[in-house]
Image 1 (cartoon, rainbow, N blue to C red):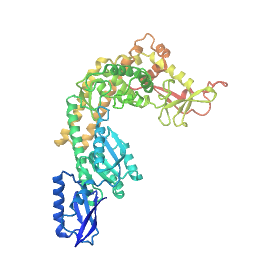
Image 2 (image 1 turned 90 degrees about the horizontal axis):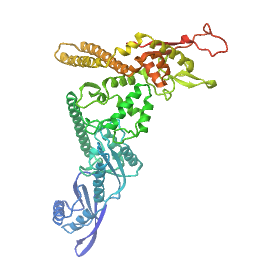
Image 3 (image 1 turned 90 degrees about the vertical axis):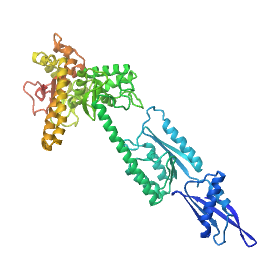
Image 4 (image 1 turned 120 degrees about the horizontal axis):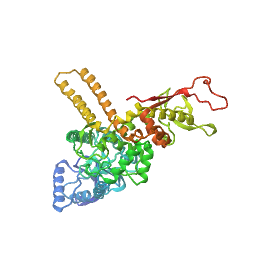
Length: 559
């Protein structure tokens, strides 16, 4: 609220008139109170002309000017100067403003975009006479992404609800939100508290009136449409790039330079070492720990030391083998060189996706069966745990189904595996799957995917019904999985070639480290622990720890 004084002459007497001016949140307008109707329009025009001719900027918001007291007759231009003075020099109502800045993609990671937004918002705050109480930042976060939490935005609304700030400044309304659902939540917080919202590019966001809220909602609908349309174009462009084998852009992929095509030597070498260690039986967590110790970090904008989750995601990428992927499907060869031989990548992928080979426990590198042996009751894996007397036992993760002595179980399993490795038919599984079979298998997989894609054409032409397409798709998907499994077997065979060609493979297995033994076990057999039968088996002698050998089965894997 701004105030100035003027004098009204009534006869020979002068009376002091107080000229009050108030700037509101609504759309730009100029309201005069306290003048006769005939003088209103003339006064508005005189004030606008006088301000323009003198170079005085007038606020682009609703301005109400009141001449007090209303009982005194007022006419002519005697109050124009006071009105202009009020409108120009009036400061804000002392609002404590919060600046919200956001940028969707910060490729440099320097936060320059949000810094520029903040600078412009501070300039606007100074022009409005507002005090900047806080700055809320969401850098490298889209306002349209549902899964990513905008911490700065949440803090902004929390401070509004707490009464810490009563005004908001943003560079544009689309910095605040681009989804209509989020806009409605914003209105629910802002409107009842009378919080004023100003933007550098879009002017005021009037949420105090139904008309203003309608305009805000229309803007929200247009912003959401723009994002959805942009997303459709991006998906189409990426699909076209995938068909052509070109990189589709985005964050720098691990192992490659920012162009997405040129291998980055240090990371590529680290990826090769990681794949070899994992195939040899080292746990994923241990491999990631080794990489972090070597100073290897992720390639994301906020790079951090390599961890198990990031490494798993990286190893599964088809691009490592020179393949193009689009929305989870391999679409063909890429136009960049692969880092890993395809058979190695297939072996890593098969191992990562095989439930029998995965575990979240931390002792898989120390014990042969932890995370590999299965519980016959629930089908889950077992883990090694401490027991009385300093012993260790394998226990079902539920803790109730099976419990078996770790040392005796591992001794039994090692003996069975050694026996299998002495059989020529077992070793043939590693020698028949030669790397030169990769090309035919790859061609077969590509042909199957093409046949699956053509089903859509047959359906569109009316040659197939929807039910027939579903049946044919399921059949082809099964064949594709079978081919991919055979490709994975080729990679596993390559990793086991040294064992199969040894003079005594069984002895090489028994002398190997636990990690190597685990890799052989995972490739060869499935070990299942069953509940023990009641009583003691024949041949058990008192004074010895009881172990039912028939309760542990070792079965050769199919294929």
